[in-house]
Image (cartoon, helix red, strand yellow):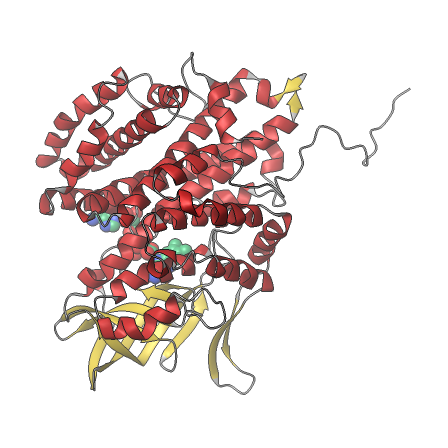
Length: 527
Ligand SMILES: Cc1cc2nc3c(=O)[nH]c(=O)nc-3n(C[C@H](O)[C@H](O)[C@H](O)COP(=O)(O)OP(=O)(O)OC[C@H]3O[C@@H](n4cnc5c(N)ncnc54)[C@H](O)[C@@H]3O)c2cc1C
């Protein structure tokens, strides 16, 4: 007799990765938090991980993404209102980030490890929703730029750093124009003096995320050249439409027209890029943290699924080829987490030389790895990973963003070349840290031995042609050195085997034989 399987007979399916303490299951993050100087923050980071991993937060993350923002340009009588309609879940998520001081912790409480603690908080909250991190990151990053002008800082910093969603303020940025985002010197938005220290801005910005921000840093051409301005949202700032984006769909990103909008100059006239670069450097750190968060979420979902699902008579998690894929994904995530928090420590230490160079190299690499990682993690869930009820499509759609925003791959590579030419102490400081692991792993030693020759080739006419390869080699040297010095030997061995030398594979899941996958995977999802 043939029996049809009834629809209600659900077997061999996973369960949602929800109501999980996201810090407790993430051993690399726990260790990095302590190692990089933020052990004091473990309780608040744990609270953040518990809430971000709750079914409630995950549902808010899904809902905010599904119920997309709507631009409300006019009221019913035709007056401009320039507002954005946002789902209550968006507010729940953004409020949660603000109340946890992810936008402000190092400025409110500048104790050693504050940037590291904040990085860990961001890494966890991003796993609830990546979109809300955009205004959080811009607000955090604006503060050091604002401090160039003590009067403007005194006026705005107290509100920008308040952990109060209603009474506090958020800051955005408007640099990108139609004719160029990377090349901001091509900006044509005009600034004309209006007396009493005020300026009027006229022009258009092609990307301006989070229109509800209270204040924006804007680049515009003053008579003395491209300058930075502080602009309060209000009359003369008209939002024209919201971008229909690939990912981070919960986040409104707009096109905006300035019609004589009143602003004040921040920093010296003609020094706009130099002024806003302090903001950009911090948002680049956040791109690293955000991509580390994406890879972390991807590997957690993949391992979780493989532990619950069987095929051909055994759990996926126990099958050697799947273990190779999972271990490879876990290594990438562990290296990204360790890198993000180490980089954050350089912001605590105010180590400008190392920080600037390392941010450029690591922003390129960590962001570049995120999209293929998300695609491979999605594949681990099979068809269930491809449907919209799963978190994986969102993870994949969000994954390229950090690679574009605040300096895309080529721009970061060119930035590394520029730093090598103009700030000659940066590269040696970076290499000195890589060298700290010298002698512990022959593959890393060989990789380090190869760097001087590769860097020398950047001195010739092929410098730009070779730049990506050089930045990749630098980033791998840094990550391998970090893991060799700080991770369990099995993890460091697997990373060096899988990422350095000619034996390295191309796709994920190509680790050579002899890797201790148990040791790698036990840390990736400590459940
Ligand atoms: C979701 C989202 C939100 C954003 N929010 C904001 C915001 O709030 N405020 C804001 O100001 N901007 C924002 N942006 C814009 C973003 O910063 C720009 O898209 C980015 O800087 C790239 O600029 P572009 O789009 O003009 O590309 P282009 O500058 O035209 O670059 C196109 C490609 O050319 C490459 N390239 C550029 N120059 C060179 C070169 N010399 N050699 C080799 N390759 C090169 C780049 O790497 C890139 O791959 C946002 C973008 C996105 C996607």
